[in-house]
Length: 327
Image (cartoon, rainbow, N blue to C red; front, side, top):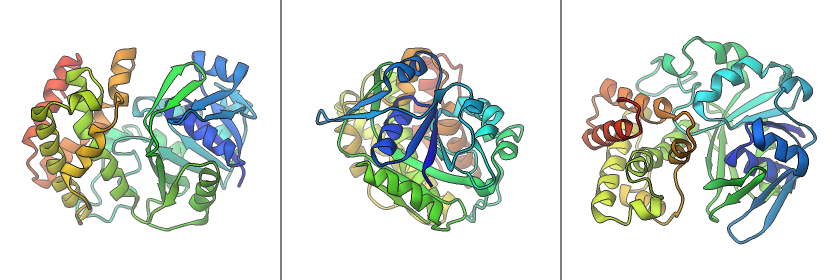
């Protein structure tokens, strides 16, 4: 495996592209707009927390996957609202053996496929309402991905990675620890990004989602970074309660508890002077990932009988103030 395409080279996608290139992969990129123009002209530059510059000159950068052709692996790093466009145009990147890793926030569209938790086989049709993703990307291709990397596009083609605590976790939805996820992980590790392969990718999804559930609504309300938002003791206490509710929900859905404490999880977020991506999207006038991040977890809470009063309130308030008219 060497040919790897990043589908969606925004802040996270651009950072991952640079790490792959640094690790020796042959990188191609699907992007659009000013970001694509800058990548074609200058490539991608990632400035890390300590001032190190990583550079990626992709083999091909295009808004048309037909110009790129079949790949050994594709990493989809778009936001959930853009998934229908992925389904519509990903086919030229796929040959019979191509793996497709979805490195995204929130509950992923493939979550119910092969799930063996207490709520299985619960369907989550909202994540792929017309089945387009299941038709375009066969279930056997899918690799789940969870990334920790606070990144911002400073200007087209230039990305700032804001702290040293970066990590990518990959895993097969059926729990296998296969060679293809390991091959992708090797490139990231060689490129300086810690990357592990897990047999329980759904637990990793929930672990990341807990932070999104706390930081997303509260930072949408405050319009401030996590560091500024959680510096207020009352807001921080509310964030801890949200994570406690989220941990109870995760345990009910997964059938086992997640490790760590709510206080420890919030303490890590509170040290990060970074605006969550959903707040960045609001400020840029882009669609918000409300369904995958908030609406579906709340629906699962109702199904599982897990009370989430603090999360309910904060999501409702954030939806109103963001102009979404409710959840």
